[in-house]
Image (cartoon, rainbow, N blue to C red; front, side, top):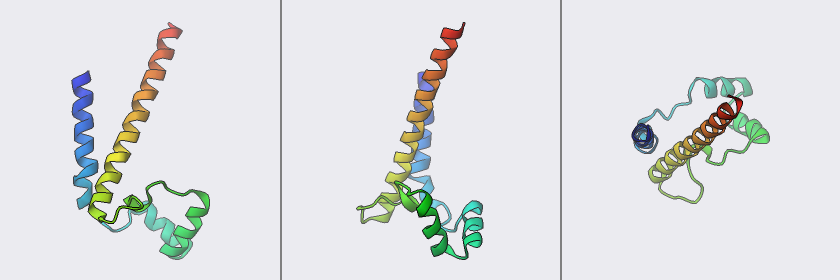
Length: 101
């Protein structure tokens, strides 16, 4: 099981840190709907930042001048955060399952 986790993490890190750089710069479907709903990209960003400020806006890490490096780091950080959440959630649920039996 550990080998599978390590392999999965490595694959996700490669996708988040390298392959994601080749993604389209155009907005995805959900973002396009928000842009159309609010009347433009600037209006959408203004309205959504009133609700929530992203820690890594547009996959760029503030303070890093090199956009490619920033985007790669943002992908790697995102993968590691999600991986940690999944591992912790799994351990919590596994612990509850054992105590319920």
